[in-house]
Amino acid sequence: MYLKHFVAQNYRNLQQLDVEFDPNVNIFIGQNAQGKTNLLEAIYFLALTRSHRTSSDKELIAFNQEYANISGHIYKSQLDLSLRVLITKKGKKGWVNRVEQAKLSKYVGQLNAILFSPEDLDLIKGAPALRRRFMDQEFGQINPEYLYFASKYRQVLQQKNNYLKQLSKGQAHDQLFLDVLADQLAGIAAEVIVRRYKFLNYLRTYARDAYAHISTGGEELTLTYRPSVPEITADDSTEVIYQKLLANFKKNKAAEMRKGTTLSGPHRDDIEFALDGKDAHLYGSQGQQRTIALSVKLAEIQLVHQLTAEYPLLLLDDVMSELDHGRQSALLNYIHGKTQTFITTTDLTGISWEIIKKPQVYRIKSGKIYLEKGELNG
Image (cartoon, rainbow, N blue to C red; front, top):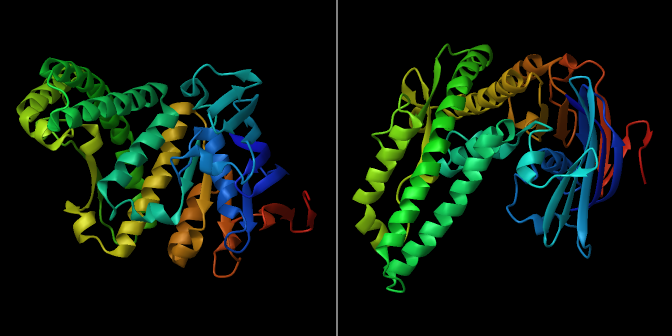
């Protein structure tokens, strides 16, 4: 899978970008605030119809403009596909081969992209919310069912929390309606959790192998899903998980009504990363934590390939300078010849570029992109 032709209009500072990409490695050089990250964000948005930097799509529309438009031509499995996403202040729409998709969930999955930014280095040491967002974004793009249930869960959770707030303030009194919402939420949550277990089981093997490839320490990496309802286990069926969640909601009903929020469920779950059985969040060094984060991203590449028979695009947003020479070399060796890769950097010094054969190098300035030996567009 690779992105051949890409167009961005009125996307942040990318006013009129039209570029052909190399199917192997594309390097973008530029100072900060020139548009490097905006470009990778736009490619990521073309794949997932969401940004990794903001939850407000309106922020993506250039100042004084009514819309942002991104489109691309991709090749995969000997097929050509044209993709387009239109962002307006009222919402967004997606097209596949010029056919508008009734739901964005039908659009997502046509193009797979894995993005690795400096913030992802905090995946291990950061807050649990980062790891939950990681699961929702990455699993959602490879499995439409996960995307559907995760989205539905957020909707019902918000509805239940809104009603709990009303109960806590004495603005509502119908506890039977709360029980209905709890039952509905438990059913959807069970669907989310059983899929998280499934995909993390795949990811666990690939991440362990990637860590062994990159690390020189010899430790073994393990990934463990930590549900907020401790009675839930990896061997439980969807029905059993549903029953355990429902029982937990009933047990915590009074506390939830008092606090005005749902105290357990997928929105409170976490992933534990451990080295030789020790929680890396608590005991891992910064170098070990960064190696784990990198290993997880590399594992995602393998997971997407296993589930779709295609390698995803890899977007490396200014992370090369954050890695030491050994990890740079391990990363570039691992992806060489597998994925179409997009790398942003402020300069080419201090990075192990010798591993990459004939990369295409561009310069970005004020939202415009230039080939090293000539301007691509004005």
